[in-house]
Length: 425
Image (cartoon, rainbow, N blue to C red; front, side):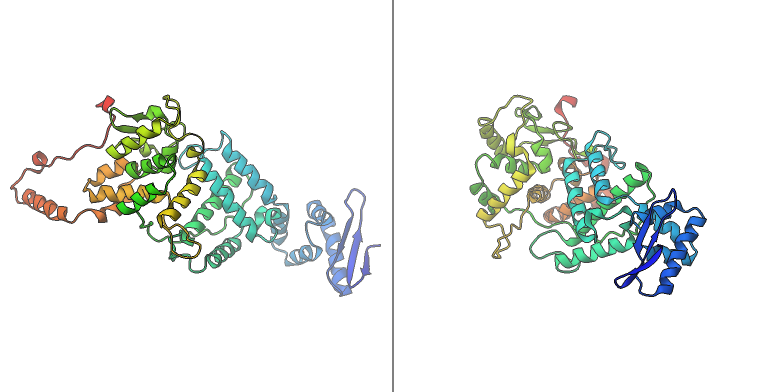
């Protein structure tokens, strides 16, 4: 029996010696149409397309799709085969994430191992992708198309409640930044599929969203005092370090006591227990009087051998720090004022607080760049608008003297050098 009717539709049942048995519904009630589909199966056997017949027998291709592709006589059959033979995304993404965690997981851009926080962010991105893909983790690599990227961006914007190019009023990151982080995860995965797995990957059109300017949030002196008053005693040394040095949270949590030079009033930031963000992040930062007192008290409560972490245990985990900081903000009144009282200050804003304070103190741009470990002065320029205007007239007068020949610029202009290791001085 080859063609028969069961229920509403016609079915085919074809078998040859050495071939898998093909049993499929034609999805049509028209007998002539069903006969044409059956002829397509025989035609594919005559031209030796075992690959397509095998996919049909496994149910990975629908008979009506195969028939329509065959009739078009173009490269549709090859496209259909490639799509059906495409690997399953769930398992492929898991393999990619395992690769990133392995010693072989090196970024092609930085030539360095991927940070654990980056890998966690990639996992979050792919969780969102699987929610949009109709078959979730069972989707195939060929499902990652330009249409999928467009659909994902549209859904993400709708979920965010508006345009991806507009910032939210509650201080949370705009959708544009989130979408762009997800697109970076997608691009990195597809590059690995092409280069490491040597898979035939369709390159979807990936256009990043235009992001608004950086967050304009820093803490005032009153807010700093309020945070200290509502902060657990054992956690304040970490947050105070971020405020008074401008360190990134990962840099501070990676410090060892051997990096804290109390007599020289400086802290060394380098590739220690945790990696620094970039090579320009290797630097020395001064310890202020206030921070010196805080660290002295902290020193009496934790192990302080040179190889001991400055912030041990939960103090050294970002997730715990974020939870505590949310409670501090709630107690200090740093929230949006709504019923949920979502904090409007983030841990990274403590770093911005240092940058704004440095600019208000009229510290030159080049030294702020060094103190904060910025890779480019363009990143530091955001703080220059906080520089006191009183210095503008002084700078203008000095420049005029040089231009008028009333002052030797090379002889009179003295810029303090960036902070350097005293041992190398």
